[in-house]
Image (cartoon, rainbow, N blue to C red; front, side):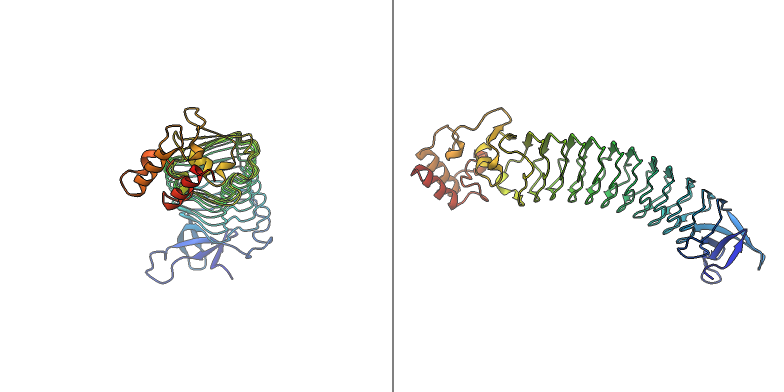
Length: 406
């Protein structure tokens, strides 16, 4: 048997491994048939006691855990009441309980395991108490009726696929305790219109909010330094997003198919942008780049593939228009202005000193920079004539060719 004794139709397993074990007086609820639709067949409403007596040895034990796959695939289970002696709801404890509508999670619970409520399609609400310090992956996977969720302020992370497919969920607040949001954590939450991310979160995983088709806006706090690829895939109702000023990379296909997005601001902290980052963003008409050293930013293929660069306006820092006009992919924007509305004049033609003319003075300025007599930073990127890497001999050759009319 998979359990040690039955009391009132519920199976229990000893947790103590030997006499004197700290868990020797504790038991956990166990399954009767492993991953079977016959598991607890006919059970509809259950109240788990805080203590249970084993009639065979006349001893009483404290119930501290709902064991792995304990009620998994019980087709008839509707309501569950748990005592405040329970500390763990373990792996798959209520996996695929399609009739389950109500379960209380007492303040004694410290961990909710992987797949704990996976495919409980009639569960409507979940209150994760402040006592919970571990929330497993896919814990509420495809709980398609789950409309309200409260996450306690001790949960350190939202695991991979934790709320995947919770299509009735409309709003959620991520508490300050959460540092990471896992891959596909909220994927396919199609009713989600609002989500608040705390300013202590540091990373957002791949496809984290993918296919959240009702999400209209989002603010990524400055604490976030990494966002995985496709994190906002097919968020086709999202019209505005504020990116973290600490973000170092815009991952590949990050905004794929965000058709309602009309503008985007790229922080100066960004050092790389992945391929097809804006794939399908065909309504973006304004890109505001805060990047000063644009030539040092690594770009993947077709970064702006979804943007009509002949119609979209690219706004850049003052003094950097020339660098953007020379930089690969950025130069595809036909309308580049700086933050003061200037169009750049002759910067494209090697106006290193910024006086509006291209002549020997620019050549002298560039030579002084290369000899270390002047600082390239004083020229706001104009010294990077060829738009590649830093300022070097290649820029000198490029400027000479411009002066020679080549």
